[in-house]
Image (tube, rainbow, N blue to C red; front, side, top):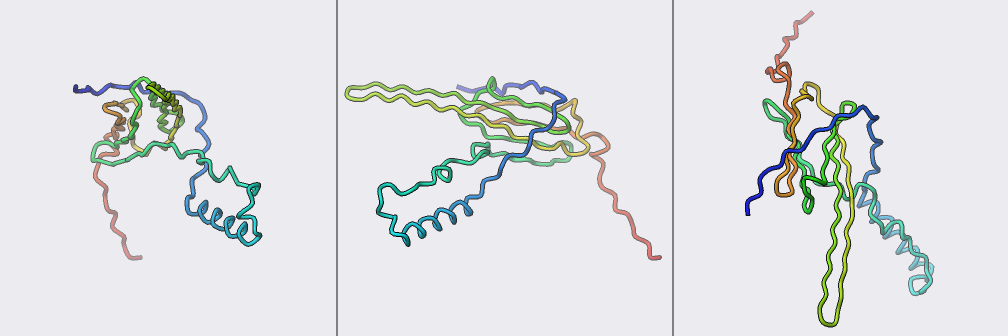
Length: 174
């Protein structure tokens, strides 16, 4: 079955841009966990069933679920491509807000499996929001978004002025 690309509406609002999310530092987290392990071992707590466990370090940081995004500049436009497996066009939103383009999505998935001797019910919920500053020279009135097979493609056409080739300025000796 061939899925056709779905055009998504581009919303425009004048809300303030969202605050940047905390970044994820995997090597720093690993270092802290190794340090904690050696500290516990040195104190003899490593065998204690009631030793303290840092649950916060086990939880994913905010922004972990952000989708993979590619941004490409071409002669006449910029293109943003986001991989959104398991989502459909109805659960994705693209908004232009205060000189930024905001990609938002939400996933609701439930699985239920019954068989002789076992019952499994899984739920998976999650949302993301990514924001990118619009480059200078983008014609915001012509921004378009399409969604097909879990891939969101947003085209940001350049203005005629931005499409002109760069001009090298000669430097004269004084």
